[in-house]
Amino acid sequence: MRKIVAANTVSQLVGKGLSAIATFVVTLLIARQLGASGYGDFVKITTYVAFFYLLADFGINAVYLQQAESRTSWPSLVCIRTIGGLLLIACALGIVTLLPGTRTAGYTSFVRLGILLYSPTILFQAWITTGNAVFQKRLRYDFAAWAIFFGSLVTVGLLWALLFVWQVPAVTGALLALVAGSVVTAATTIYFAFRLHPFAIPHISGADIRRLFLPSIPLGITLLFNLVYFRADSVVLTLTRPTAEVGVYGLAYKVFEVVLVFPTFFMNAVYPFMVKEQHVNLKKIFTNSFLFLLVTSLASLLILWFTAPALTLVKSDFAPSISALRVLSLGLPFFFVTSATMWVLVALKKQSALAVIYGVSMIVNIIGNILLVPIYGFMAAAWLTGISEGLVLVLSGFVLVQSFSLSKK
Image (cartoon, rainbow, N blue to C red):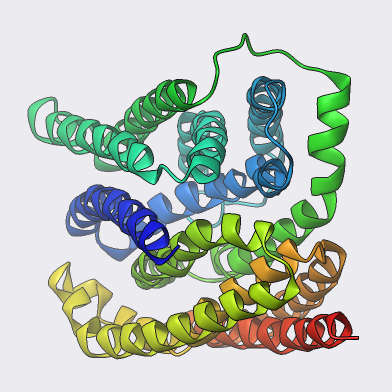
């Protein structure tokens, strides 16, 4: 088990490392050319669209993994995600027209046009998520790494051509390059997924929809609550603070998000084993995962804390990002270990309890952002991020202790 978990975690990290390099190149070029304010518009666009990425998952992958092997689940999953992705694009474009914005602040005409250009990646991300369900079930994340490699290569190459050969405006060029890279990653992902899964023409079965979608609703709501409180600070910053602050906080948050992929990838590899185990072995797997993630989070915290000043190498405008990144890094232990508590509760089929936990945290986070961010700016958002995840850890830990205690009786 340890070798399989390690191999698949490394495969995901390699893939994310390649993606992170591509993202870093995009970030560096945009930030250096446009400064904090111009980068702020880019953050508004990508953050808004990314809000819908997790909705494309809606917890269906976890349900897919819990079910027995079926020749009809995979084709139905492809169709559900395709239809869902198209509906989410329509929702994203409809909602943005209702959000406030002036010529210089909020969701400006330029930002809305950027969202229109970038919104197709919602569908491509839905396909990538669908392919990852097969990779996770078969524990073949090396295929995911190859898909990301090809997509990242296209993103970086096209971005260089758009900016320095065809001299397309920086934000527009970055969005076009990211869309093209997303297309290549999605196409490669689906190709590899069909290599692992018996080929069948994608179709929709009413029984498969009920079997896949209905059990995923509690977890989907949980992920929605998690996403809302994870992105609420960016929305409040966009609506109440100068665009430059959005850029300053966005750069710090981008680095923070890169580190957060480790517990996600680690638990992606561990979760299939959690699904198969009974309470005794499940508790052992959870304990080992918890301790490993805790130690790793402390090491990551120290690395981020001491390397944060490097953000000024991008441009002097981003000096305030140092404090924001250091405050965000203090929440890393919470984020790392709640990844373990969350997925063990999913394995125990406690999705309803998770929905309540993340619902409470979301309410606390939103109220805090609305009250404090307009006054104290991005530093308040950074502190609230860690506090909200700490609340999740306390509540999920309480439910988990009760669940394991009941299993002994």
